[in-house]
Image (tube, rainbow, N blue to C red):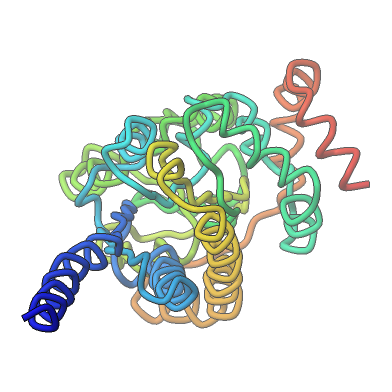
Length: 323
């Protein structure tokens, strides 16, 4: 009898422990605002695979693309509130919550990927990420959206004069809006989902985005001209909710950071290695592509740049680091 009691006690312990072990595995929700063909999604998949492997399945990630959990601004708010565990967002709307990030949106701050990597992969980039903890977010790594260019349905934009009067969708970002006002356009700050609808209805003349977004959303179906202005480099950040972060062990936190960094490389490599191919496809689909003399655009924006140099300490640090 004692042996039977021990046996049944052992079985009971197994059944008690089994659901407990299953409960230990967490599925984290990660949202982003673009589609499953975008670099964000490719990066998110790489992050998910890495994290599940690094934690032996204890941490899993379910990805929600295409604004399923909200546009970028809504996603940032949801992460801060603990409603969503993780999000990938461009820094454009992030500066509404963390004002220091506005320095990254100053036009023509970065002019090459080499400059981007020098700053954002170094101490300055790490300080930016660390600063998010004071704004209700955990910054895991810098990803990227890429250099932004102008598309429209009216005319080729070759000089700032060609922008005059055009209704151009921008992100909900004051620096971007002021830049387009300075260039003579009429900026219309909208979430990207609303912008697509407005472009279809003809309520907007154009928009600005990196080549990978223009390609992923087949904007040649809505726009006739792509002008390679490269006016702003658009970084992205993968952020985590502090509520989620507190529940993780130190080992899991380390895995999150490491996998975010590894996925950043995957995501950036995808953008940079395929940009030429994407441009060729865009042209093949009928969109007219032209380059611009960026000196004219920089000259037009020079007064704004000087104004921000006085206001933004982070901008001075970045500019010093670029020299």
